[in-house]
Image (cartoon, rainbow, N blue to C red; front, side, top):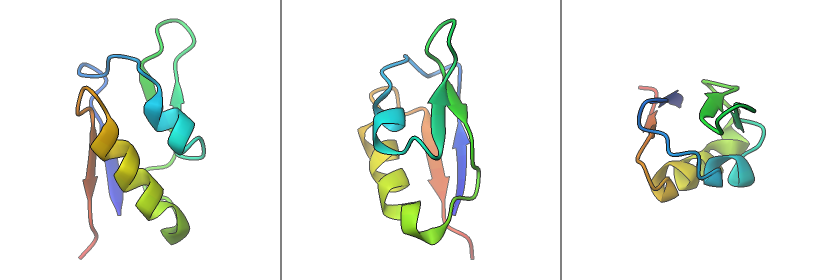
Length: 66
């Protein structure tokens, strides 16, 4: 799994951080998403997929490794 975030799309809702704080954080000054782990361990994959699916700005992209 590879994750990318589009900080320009991010609206700072913070749902991703609530779901997967090991993978996502927010900048203190404006709440924009910060990616902490581009390739999280397998046990977090389902949670990361959920975070991407509920992101109101569609700022999180997930791709599966071949």
